[in-house]
Image 1 (cartoon, one colour):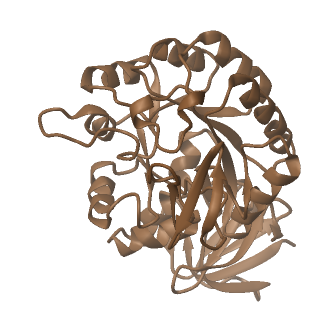
Image 2 (image 1 turned 60 degrees about the vertical axis):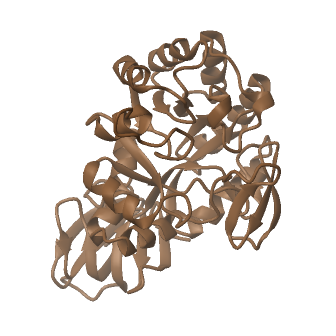
Length: 371
């Protein structure tokens, strides 16, 4: 007999069950039903949703994924896991290719162990003029050999890479990534409208944190924002930490990108910690009032919030609960091919998150075990 969980609300891909129940057998969801369970549940809660899926996160708890220390990377992962993010795609900031290769090799071990769900290269193929917190010394021209080396170091776990298509060699990188079965994201870019369209035609399918790290939308020159937002084949990342994107813009984007909105935390090592001085890759960062900025320039340097915070921000911006949760679960999971994650369906991984009336995480299950 499996573990039986009951809730006033259970979010499935088809509907919101009010009330509902989920039965877990080992590491897998065995059954789901509406109404009261057929026997006394082992545990009850207010709202039960799938484990959250963060496909763009750099660290937390003082630890970073830009490391060759498995212990440090594991600490960062566990900080987010305890906050409800049960599937974590670790993001690396720009660095020399040799350094990135070593970091990917280290993180690949954690993917093999199941702690991480994949890896994301946010650089080094980015625009110098829209680099954000990335160290300009580590930005690189695109070449296929670097892609091959990094994909080999990741041992099949490199799921996504962010590219500014307009840089020298940008389309060579895009082709090499597509050939290596790695998702291409357009971001940290100064690309004009035709170049962005060409990148999509070449295989780009993700917008890296839309609006941030790219020129703003102009009514005569749509640029990357207009093209990526309007293309049905593109999944649109948004950072909903209350700083990177205004609430009205969050709501507008959700309406324009129905079914394509992917909530990301873009959290860095300061996530979960007090204000102070930190480092993102090799870039010094100062956190004041919970906002992380590059110490030297004042540019935003990722966020200090978890994905669960983003759900509350989207909900406060006017999105229905189902849409806000889906943006942090099923949509990113589908975009990155994490087929057993992000949905409460029979046969899926038993990754579950309990929320209270304020949408605060109260308990987290990973692969059938409470964390």
